[in-house]
Image (cartoon, rainbow, N blue to C red; front, side, top):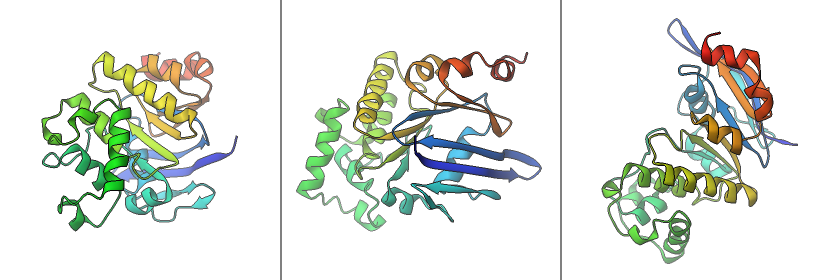
Length: 243
């Protein structure tokens, strides 16, 4: 399977601490790839390096076969790579529709004009409906529940029709009903051809949803393979359970 995202030797140091250490892995096109590991293993830092929210000290990123020499979130989103965050990043004083339009990476001044063109509104409403929150389209996003904010951010990153979405803890702190809804959305979008890289602590979800699974430990890749292979790998068990 062709690699849509290639990570080669990615390294990041914070003072004397190496958060990501010569990390290499690939995300096959059309896959739902998991990036898992114990707390502090470097998963979110890797996400930040890939998407330009932090600058790598060494290593290379390739997206769709092209080198990403200086990752920049806006340029990457325009080229088809986008992400969510552990804590949903939304504009609480804007409506859901306005948040959706803001995600199109327009100049920041346009975010606050509240002028939403009809095609954009129609696209936003379509996505909000798929996520079950269209009835709240004109409500302030700050009034949403924690789980609904997660749904809004997930829906918003789809506005630009990306090819690869990085999901950082999409079900953390979310009730079981919304976990099922998020899983269903990932499956349906993946069936349409969207590729995912998912950081997730819910290992039951990972094992039934993701393939391949990449395991990080101390900032570097410890194991990679099918869910059943990774689940039974003694190195993985030792990393999670301490022997």
